[in-house]
Amino acid sequence: MTTKKFMFVNRKAPYGTIYALESLEVVLIGAAFEQDVSLAFMDDGVYQLKKGNQTKGIEMKNFQPTYRALEDYDVTKLYVDQESLTARGLTADDMSVPVEVMSRAEIGKIMEEQDVLLSF
Amino acid sequence: MKFSILVNEGPYTHQAADSAYQFAKAVLAKGHEIYRVFFYHDGVNNATRLTTPPQDDRNIVNRWSKLAEEHKLDLVVCVAAAQRRGIVDEGEAKRNGKDATNLAPGFRISGLGQLIEAGIQAERIVVFGD
Image (cartoon, rainbow over all chains, first blue to last red):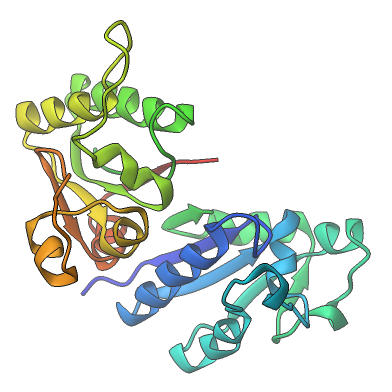
């Protein structure tokens, strides 16, 4: 099968809407199809990776452990937008999985190299 | 050029559903090919034949069905997203013990692999969402 570079752009908070959860489902399928998968987190999407999400109070399943499982699917390219972190008072230390924090311009360059960009 | 289209928002709530249709029509009018239209998130609600808009409004669901028939489009609804939102064909009704179906003509329910494949096969995949 053809391998293409797929980037999934995560822009929404993990809860409040279903985008983050359903985006993660596509990422896993993309990895299962042995595509060259990477993820970018920006805007409120950076909260998807913030340590210590607690969902009991809102009666939703906490899917944060799934991000930690991405490595098992050989999905290791996780890029986080520095400006989005800073705007929310977050740093790389707040991230629950290994990521590369980079500037918006640098992420833009990586986007340029992609075959398929799916934005959620 | 060969396009795929991803529709992530529901009909009437969000213009993405209209824009996706208008884009699909424009693509076909220009002589391009549409490999697949994939419906995800609330976009799966574009596929319920039970939709009944006021008579003086556009019927977004019927519009897709008609376009699919005219151009032999492959309209695919994500099964996981459809199950959450109650979009059901005969197979799904049987599998999940439901007493009704509502999938509109021209659509089919399948897995997310069809979205990845749509990305692989098309030269461009265009996303309509929020």
